[in-house]
Image (cartoon, rainbow, N blue to C red; front, top):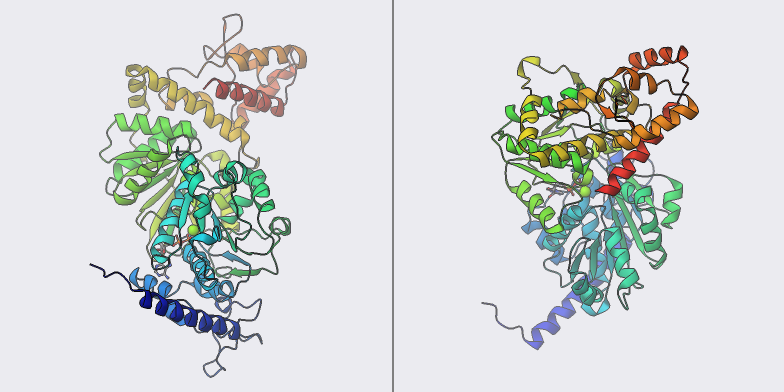
Length: 591
Ligand code: ADP
Ligand code: MG
């Protein structure tokens, strides 16, 4: 048992802390590295070079510093790092800590799984310690993460590395009922780890919420937080923070946009990128393959993959919540022989956290949306990342595959590309992502569509899920920005519908009505011939069977040709796209 500490002891401790802080301050002051220097980006110097010289006539005393012990850090932080077995620094830590510890604004870029979290947690702790921050001082630092799970993970790192310090830290993430409780305690927290939405909620609603004295702002996964999805929230947050502060931005795919940086009013930021000269943009121990898989075979391929990897921990990315729900529910009923889990943004927060922790602990297959794409460190042990649907861009690909092969472990990933999406392959190669195109091994393919079809007969509610999955997939493709890769008109939608186990392509009355009325006024070629020729997929407004199918290029040309002789005329692909979109909005509103 611990003996109560005497007054004398506490006084002594305060004095020795004061001494330590003075020492740290003068150490940091005396050894500031030159601005713009990054020892990790330089080739090794000749053996007898003077200590600290960096070869380009700049100077950093930290050039040869490789262990945390050698940095000007408090004993409390050093002890905790040692206790967590953090001894040698990773490259991004070596490059950024000398700058961040002396209070500079930092833009840190390093591959996934390379230790960026400690690169910002350590300077946050040290800054508050050297400022002699205490509970009464209020909010000293704000760390923003794009997702709740990542925020929780950063919180865990902070509490373990900061365990010897007396700071209070709080996790402010949406979706929890305790917002009222949070409101009571938020002003007593020294470090806030939060998602943008919840932070803003507190700024707007919590009486006397005060962060006017805060010293350090961190954006983890900075490019994601700066992108349009969080624009409104971030601008509102920044407008309420003091201008005089240290700001640190970290990501594997870092922003260099002057506009973004201007929004954050950074002061001469240090751009520290440690893998820019690397031959690859992804971790070296990551093996990445790409397979061309027709849309109607994707589920067969995924099922076969799961059945042949029952001993692996696998993370599967799909493009929408509804697809995740359907594939998860359906595959679970088919008992593949490994536990299945799912994670998406529409789940209750407690459930999300529980799933995330379970997946960290146990071998299983986790079906997820991009909510798990960024930052998460699943105990270094994800064996496979399977991207069933093509990511929206190269950055998203890099983050998804970055959930495996973290720190010094290896990992594997596979991306299924539709024949119409093969442009993605070129884009990945251009961005230094070493992918290998392989042919699927047909003999291993275990078809699942007929099993799904029988399931849907047995479980009508599952049929509804399948229909929703179908529609949201079309929607997700239609909404993709990169039109060079994504083209909803090239999707074989009847075949896709059948592959989900659906007895017929979902009835889309609204779309059909619109097309009919459009067709009368604008003369449709792409659509109308199909309406005339195909049977029983969509129900026409007069109860007659009709269909709208967006075909591959060949068929599309056929249809266009047919239109030439038709009394009805042309409807552009954009118009059709708009129709799909408006229909989808209606579907969504009905949910
Ligand atoms: P990133 O944010 O760059 O993707 P993380 O900060 O999540 O990477 O770190 C990835 C993994 O590496 C984590 O499991 C973390 O504990 C481990 N790690 C980080 N720094 C070190 C270090 N200096 N020594 C050993 N392990 C480390
Ligand atoms: Mg990270």
